[in-house]
Image (tube, rainbow, N blue to C red; front, side, top):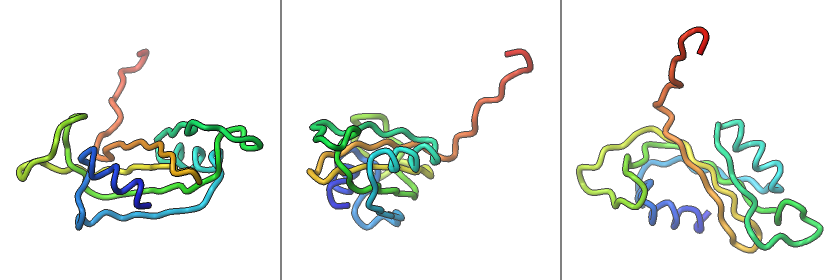
Amino acid sequence: MQIFVREAYKIGWFDDGDPIELESETLGFAEALAEAQKLGLAIYPTTGETPPYREGLPGWLIVSRGDFYDVADGETPGPETGRRPAVAVAFVDREGQLTYAMRFTDVSPAATAPGD
């Protein structure tokens, strides 16, 4: 959990003390990917594949929900930075390798006209 939270602070999703809901579950990578896909997100196998784990080492799926900073990649949030509801998933394998994804949940799918 600490590996993911430290990375989330670094990339500007949220800060220490923010009311972010965090859940963690021990899973194999395939099961973690299936859970991430249910949330509309994708995660990728971490590097360093070790047999007999064809899709990477087992580890922990972490799901976080709350109001994340609305910043572009690489930007640092400031005191006036807005927030939006979001969900993020991370998978940390038993060697501490991390993969993660996030999406804002206040975005509705674009409507398409009939025949598009």
